[in-house]
Amino acid sequence: MVGEQVEPKICSIDEALQISRKIGLDLVEISPKADPPVCKVIDYKKFIYDQKKKLKTIQSKAQKVVIKELRFGPNTGEHDFEFKLKHAKKFLQDGAKVKAFVFFRGRTIIFKEQGQILLLKLAQALEDVGVVEEMPRLDGKKMIIIIAPKKKK
Image (tube, rainbow, N blue to C red; front, side, top):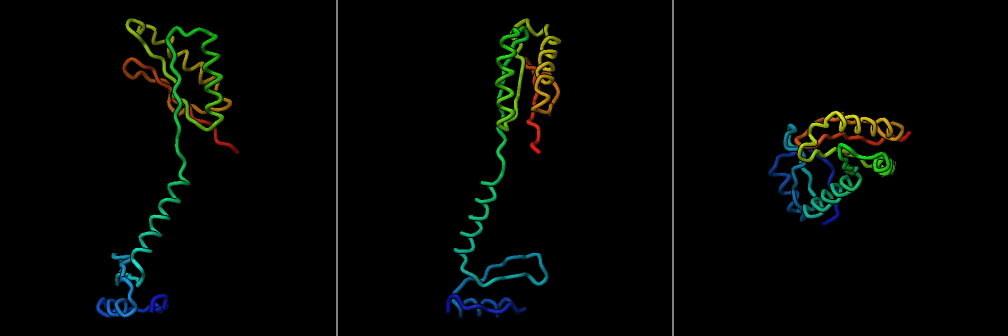
């Protein structure tokens, strides 16, 4: 009896239960909000297995966002800036987002303008490989900017 095809038909729940018992399979409610509710006579364990398999394939195809961080000081030198710029370009070309921040320690918070200039200079240097997602903003003792990679054509 298992593997026997039953043609779709409209019947009551009692009839559907009798058919499923006769075949030896389970009666599964597919769409409860439909009028009348849609049910299928199938093997429930196989149905659950297929659902999990579909969910797993969907999750594996989903893009995972990677965020790389770069830390600067308000008085970062030119060589250090160029070194970190090179790393930021590589991160963006690999498809990761870059979160660059200037960390203000102690009294260096008075150099907010220097930190903002530094982050904007970074964004300008990266404009050929990235797009500014979030402009520089002060968050406690950090000034943060987020740069996303440009979409590939």
